Length: 90
Image (cartoon, rainbow, N blue to C red; front, side):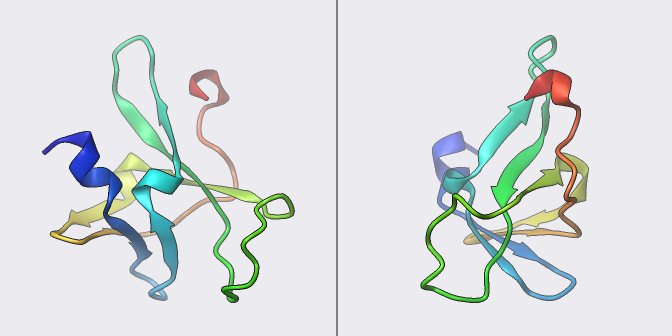
């Protein structure tokens, strides 16, 4: 699967069905030594469509290991953490 195909998939947390936007809207964090994807940095989910300004939102981290399923249109994952993964890679 190409990265461009992954980019259009929507991130959804399985626990509560929260939508985190498309993968294209995230920051990819990877280990530069081996090229392994560590995870994705996303902005906290919001309850309102009108809260589009990202400046006041906290960032969350979705570790690659939290991904359960990569489907046709969606990527399902377990949890997002408030702590960004290993800062060495960001």
